Amino acid sequence: MDKVSITLKVFFEDPFYIGLFERIENQKLSVSKITFGQLPNDSEIYDFILKKYNQLQFSPNVQMIVKKEHVNPKRKQREIHKEITKLNLGTKSQQALKKQHEQNKIASQQSMKEKMAIKKKQSFEQKQQKKKKKHRGR
Image 1 (tube, rainbow, N blue to C red):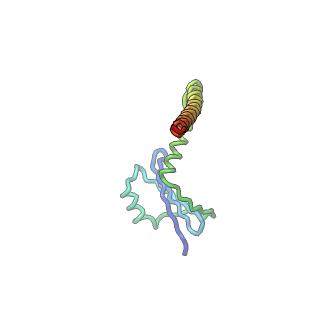
Image 2 (cartoon, one colour):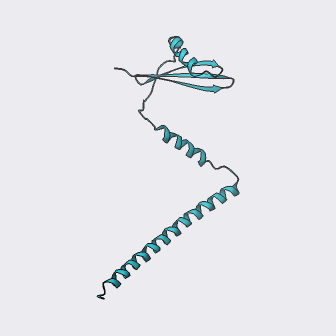
Image 3 (spheres, one colour):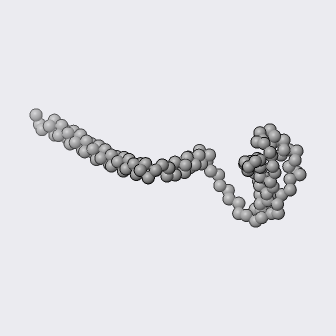
């Protein structure tokens, strides 16, 4: 049984909105391009698919490798946000300040870890001394 996958991508190509149908059948890709004019809403796209899909002229088939890769939409959104924030925006002085802030943050975290370790050790030693004091035989 053959699997057929069809996707429609709508994008703005000055001055019109373009629809790009991609059909993948038997690991072969064929494409058809249509011009919508103004931004089509969902009902217009649905009507177009129902009424005029058979009239579309697809390009000759091109061999391709089909990947079955499902990306969690939340993860995809996080990756997009990460890429956007990763860009080095601002002046060189702002970038230097940001780098200094990150270094200070790392140093602060390390000093806090050391302080917590010392505090834990002192607390443990106090408990041990208290135990020894109780069991001296008095």
